[in-house]
Image (cartoon, rainbow, N blue to C red; front, side, top):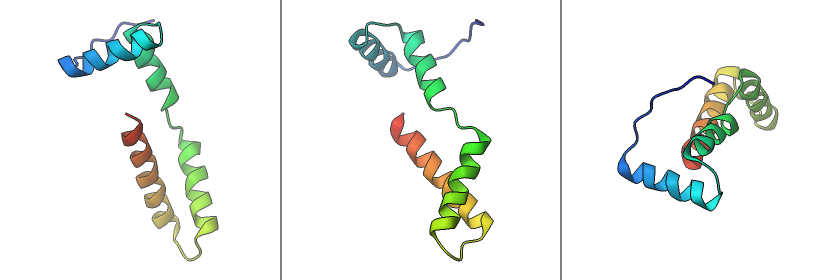
Length: 80
């Protein structure tokens, strides 16, 4: 694995330490898990956009793509 330098505030480090302690793991493992669990592939975006178009009649592809982007960003921000 390659090493990456990241800066965190003291409160973020404390939160990471607490999560790591609760899960009997390390900060690095928690960070890697969060990155891996929230990776969004281009096909995920297309699948969501198609589902939105299928369930809402009259939306253009661009409107559905925009709605999908909003949904993904909202979910990602709430999960952080």
